[in-house]
Amino acid sequence: MDKPKNSATKDTTPERSNSNMVDLDPNDTSPASSSRKRPVGRDVAKAAKKKASSVSQEYVSKMHDLSIQKIELFKEIEDERKIRLDEIVSLEKVKVEEAREHRRTMIELERERLALDKQHLNIEAEKKRRKRMSAFWLSTLINDNPFNACTIKLCRRISLRS
Image (cartoon, rainbow, N blue to C red; front, side, top):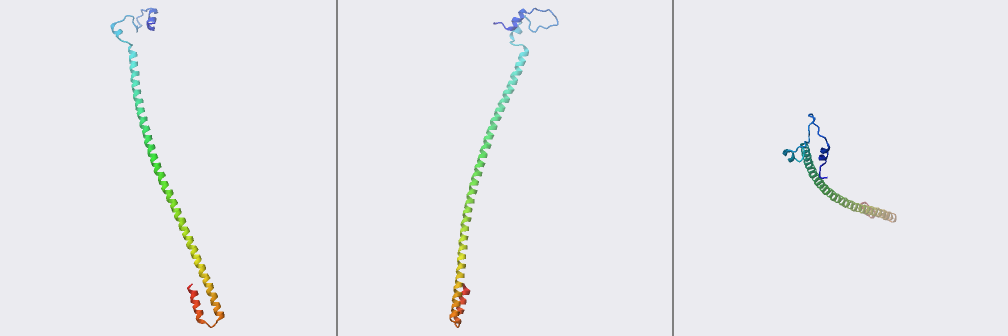
């Protein structure tokens, strides 16, 4: 089992003396061939794989760095978005509070206007009542004492003022 597979097959393969064939694995071991661990083709293939692996590692490293940068950028953007949303929310709160205050002011002004209208209507009603009373007293004075011109003039003046 210690023998490699190639050596087992070499022993059973008869040697050919064909001059056109090149013996890739000669049986004679020269000092140059014994120092090599692998054939030249395998060393080249291994070097290519190693180089590809190195390039691949560089690519993976760069991609990892880019993904970290991307995550950091997303975090920064998210933080900025949260700050903007907080500002918008605070502005909206101020806006809503100002709208409430405006509505309260408008309601208070409307109440004052209604109170003034009511007061104005009361004043008008009082004027009408005074006019009626003046007219009543005037008619009473005229009917009771038709010759009292001075009293009639006085009543007219009073009714004109009201």
